[in-house]
Image 1 (cartoon, rainbow, N blue to C red):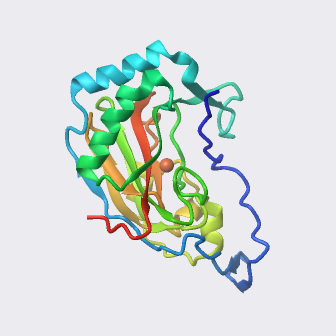
Image 2: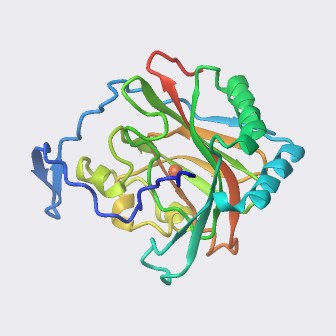
Length: 266
Ligand SMILES: [Fe+2]
């Protein structure tokens, strides 16, 4: 039985931390609490990497053909975003599990990770994402998911576009070791008011303006075919509003990695 990838809906209400201590109230009476402790104890934020030509055209064709040959592996997401009609298909996720027909692809990905990141790096999960509606800001690290546990910290999320798209992934400077939800992050931090109107309108127009007061932009990555963008899973990131920019769909390989706690990323 194929396991569907478990992305927490990002508009979900944050989980109340019973161990939280109220630290202060800001001007809007928002409660600030102490951030929960990182269960992994290892506070490593891996450096961002960009690798050109991560896949050859032949490899891209091979992966896309697998998606055609084994369509049952698809996970479909509908009805998460409140802005959309209930039956709107927001994204399709084609997961690579341990089935024999995926072994050549798995070996191929293993070789790429060995070469560019190191043989110690764990592939926690990977899939082809076909996105019809932008992902809002979130991070990719939840303790217990995709290789992140007591002994292995959450390392890189890789994005490898399978074509050229006029769209961007925006990575923020801010991170969380304990939650991938923006409302949870906001609860533990003060606003910094750094993102300007131009940046907001160009790249972040789907985000709540109030939430964006707590973030600053680290990197804007433009989706280029086979150009791998890898950033720490702990860092918050978001898609631009590609629908508004006339890009109805984008497709790429997404990989979540982890690394042993004593692994030093280069
Ligand atoms: Fe993500």
